Image 1 (cartoon, rainbow, N blue to C red):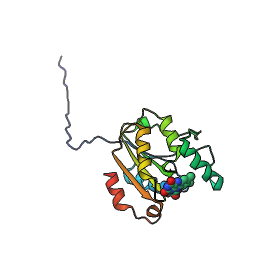
Image 2 (image 1 turned 120 degrees about the horizontal axis):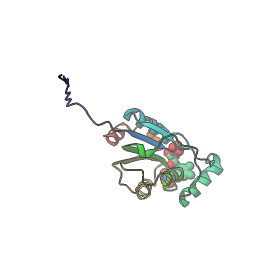
Image 3 (image 1 turned 60 degrees about the horizontal axis):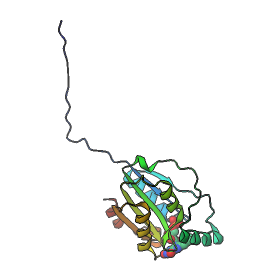
Image 4 (image 1 turned 60 degrees about the vertical axis):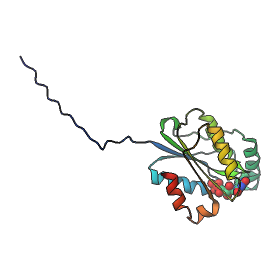
Length: 170
Ligand SMILES: Cc1cc2nc3c(=O)[nH]c(=O)nc-3n(C[C@H](O)[C@H](O)[C@H](O)COP(=O)(O)O)c2cc1C
């Protein structure tokens, strides 16, 4: 009795490792959201919007936001869809509030402590507080970002960010 083994070996030099990426953002007035959606579209990433249970809208909400950002207040968030621990790269984005990252993103980072390995930060602001916000994010995440992107509200509104976005995504 004989056994015939038929084996086919396939060698493909083009097999590449597929990197999974997630874009996570908080946005109060859709500026950071616009950027987040552009990043997700260009990188084919999953996208997660952080939705706070605290109301940060209107004049009272603005004041509350500034106070909570300074306090780095941890708040309740609506249920999230994705686990950042499942991704090779996580893009984290938020507006600058009182020269810090808006605290809904700080809350998200706290909730997912230890799950970040590769990160990139993107932030938007009227024009100030970029450096302090990026430093705070690096400290909270505990990982040095591969890249950062800091844009003014005006640059995002007027679509003046193409070349900066390209180098951020490289
Ligand atoms: C509570 C609060 C505090 C803010 N603090 C700053 C600040 O310190 N520096 C600055 O340049 N812009 C500040 N801004 C403006 C926002 O960072 C800016 O408009 C941002 O692009 C809004 O993004 P969003 O639409 O994604 O929420 C603040 C806005 C809010 C609501």
